Amino acid sequence: MKRRRSSLTVLLAGWLFADMLLALTIVMLGAEAPPKAEAYPSGGASPSKSPCAAQVRGVKSKPALAKFPVSPGASGRTLVAQVKKGLRKQASGFADKRAGMVLTFGGNGGSGQGVALASRVNTALREAYPSVFQSAATRNFHDLAASAGSISMEIYFINNGCDKKGS
Image (cartoon, rainbow, N blue to C red; front, side, top):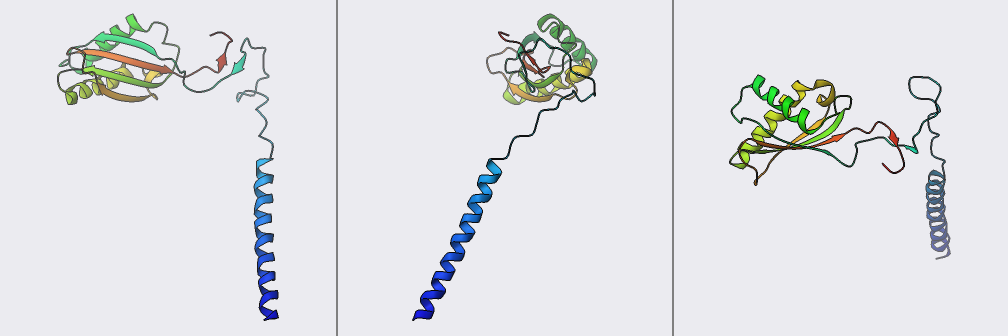
C-alpha cells in the first residue's frame, strides 16, 4: 500500500508542475510589451509635423448619404451617366477619397427587383468612379418605402489617418 501512495504523490506533483508551467507561460505571454509603432511612414520619408491629434486608420463611422433617381430599365451607359449625375449633386468632394464600404438601397417594385437595381447601380458606380469605388465592399438592399427607380446610398469612406480634435 505504501507503494501506491508514493506513486500517487509523484503523479500529483507532476500535474501540479505542468499546471504551474502553463500558468507561467500564460503570464509571460500576457506581460509581453506591444510592438513599437512605425517610426517613419511606409514611404521611408521622415515624419513631418501633423495637425492630427491622433492617427486613426479604417473606415469612417459616419457615412456620406446620397439619394437620387435612376431609370430601372436604363442600359449600362445610361445608368452610369445617371449615377455620375446623382452623385455629383449629392456627395460633392468625394473624388479625392476612397470608399471602403457602400450600402445601396434600390426601390423597384418587389424586393428581388430592388436588390437587382441596387446591384446594377453598384456596378455602374465602379465604372463611373473607378479610383474611388473599385476596391469598395458593396451591399445591395431593397428599400420597401421607396418609389421605383429611387436609389439611396450610404458611402463609408476610408479615413485618411488623421483625427483632428473636434471633427
